[in-house]
Image (cartoon, rainbow, N blue to C red):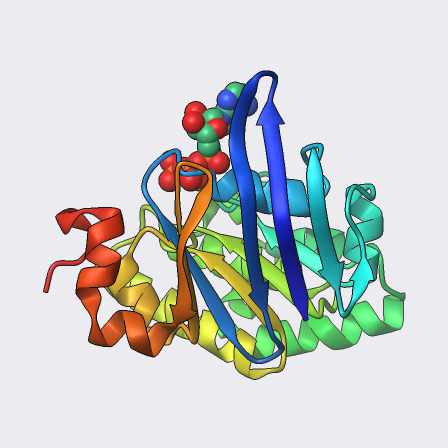
Length: 238
Ligand SMILES: Nc1ncnc2c1ncn2[C@@H]1O[C@H](COP(=O)(O)OP(=O)(O)OP(=O)(O)O)[C@@H](O)[C@H]1O
Ligand SMILES: [Mg+2]
């Protein structure tokens, strides 16, 4: 289980994250919603050790991992699929996967790679081609695969559907559901609130660096005015 407790993160004098708490349980998806600049990416990057935490705690299965170096956090079992996917374009699909498995044994990496190829057959087909030639949706699958290579217990996803065609959004989000169903705890930031809510179990809404709503996705689905109130009418189309 991943728990972020009362996290504070600043950029110099600017307090971007002011007491955010969010958690994700194995097999479940916690959806993090919030307007542009609300502090979503900052929260994930700080939890991952990529930004300094000013105060608060990040726990993985009850063990504090706050402020550890990122490679240690990956070894502990938490991984981030960053905004914009950030695959290594000139490297092959398989080389990208291998890089994701650097914290585990060769045997474990080989075993996981087969599972990744089973989950995303297109990656197997393109294994020897450069990652940069994949479509946006395929690059997102590669980013998921690369993250899975470290055999994580918890995974954070930053806007996985960003910039994808509507049909691809659906397929990427259904992959996210499958990843959670395999027993991994997922914390997902998603701009597409409506689609995100379809697969989420729990929801956290962040505004100006603070949590303004936290509860079951069912509640947000049934009472979309709750989410609308915090995100603005544009967030939900129906
Ligand atoms: N490197 C930085 N230096 C200074 N301020 C930053 C930096 N990165 C982000 N900020 C500020 O911190 C706040 C939170 O940014 P963050 O990127 O976490 O928001 P977000 O919720 O992920 O937004 P988006 O939906 O646009 O991705 C914003 O006000 C942003 O301008
Ligand atoms: Mg962001």
